[in-house]
Length: 288
Length: 329
Image (cartoon, rainbow over all chains, first blue to last red; front, side, top):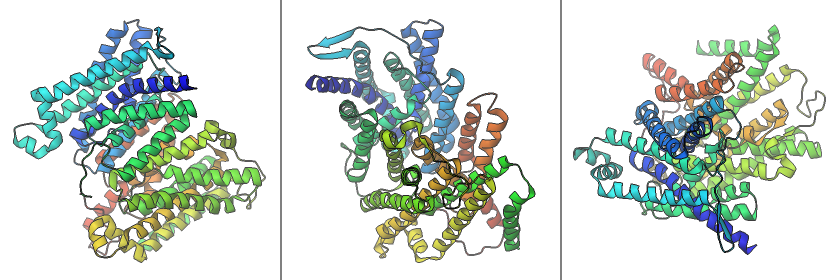
């Protein structure tokens, strides 16, 4: 039993790494554009299908297929911004939420029409790494390491480049940023493009681990949400910590009981956080 | 003039099954009534700024309570409605109290209720020994009976669903005349200002939430009795929860007829696309449906009925309005 727990713990931490990337994308979009991207997990799902199509049907090498997926999903994010999010920028928050929820229906059925309802896996056989009694899949390790590297790069971009500064400025105060000569519209576009490219990258990390199906994205969107709220909406560091907490908790709960109960536990944490500490773990208290 | 039009419309709706229309049309109409009933109940709270994206939870609780009690103890669904409604009301009381006590509002309230709907759906799957899990379960068949609310003929259900819808519309009107409406409107416009004026925020919000949950639960029982099949993914969880909100908001949740109009349009759209294109391309109809929803939200943010009503009101001389759309914050 102890070994089982240790394994669950280790895998939870690895899962947390990838979830952190997912939460980062969602957080970035929320922080800058102030829109809750309800269909984020569904974008990851589409990215996985792109990789699957290239790899399994056309025999493109995985690395190349992943690169293409990142580009395709980046363009997809741009399109999404131009066609759906930009027209809704001045609308009520609720309408933005519902429009993106409508996109869930569109994306899932799009995948259903093109690729069918079957599970599509890449069947990549990678060796299992063992550390004493703990067994880790190489694919999970790679995803974890990859996610951390990408997060590191994104951190540097946000904090050490002009574009990063502009993005952070718009996130902090849109009007003030535009007074400083930043074009918020362009930053929004850029953010959604980066967010889209990130879904392609996450898809690349997920592809060797999971088989994809049209409803694959749903639970990941929900997970990403829970993490983002847990860490504090728009708070990137909070999202990072939250991802590991949720990764470990769900992984442990799944071992002890069942996957449904694990999801219920995650959702219960979400509700508690919203009730008791809506600003999230790392959010600053503000007057309500 | 307006009343005459209403009476004619009501007469048409009542007479509709008598002129020998096809069972399919009756089926679509019944679906519209049931979902319009639920969407109207949803709008009781939605129009005061309490936007719930988790009404699937209440539908699921109602339907499953009544369905399980019927299958295992042969309890009449009429009693099941009360039991399911009370259970849903209790859940609404607990969750609502926590939300309102801690001041959860706006987006956070929407997301929290979204999670609630998903939790109920997951619970229904997790207790698969009783609920049949993801596969759901079928209600016991009995011959046509008022007591067990099962009919061979669709006409009965048509009238039952219609009466429930009318009752929900009447309840809307009743709430609109009550003190509660004034309090809730004040809260919806500015919660802090209302509180300073001595409006008991938690009490009024809770009351309307419980009523809304009760209505949703009854709607769930009606729907389950009509299709005699219960499934956690069609009765609870994110999908149905969002569907209800879509129907109410697209119709226009601030006006009495809005949710009904919205439900009618969405159900007709769904059926039209499904019948004409569904067989050829599975899923394409759903894509078209989703795209239509997104377009409607972008181009008609106040809802279809709301937009039309606004046009009419700007033309006609001003009369006292029931509820004004919430000011954008």
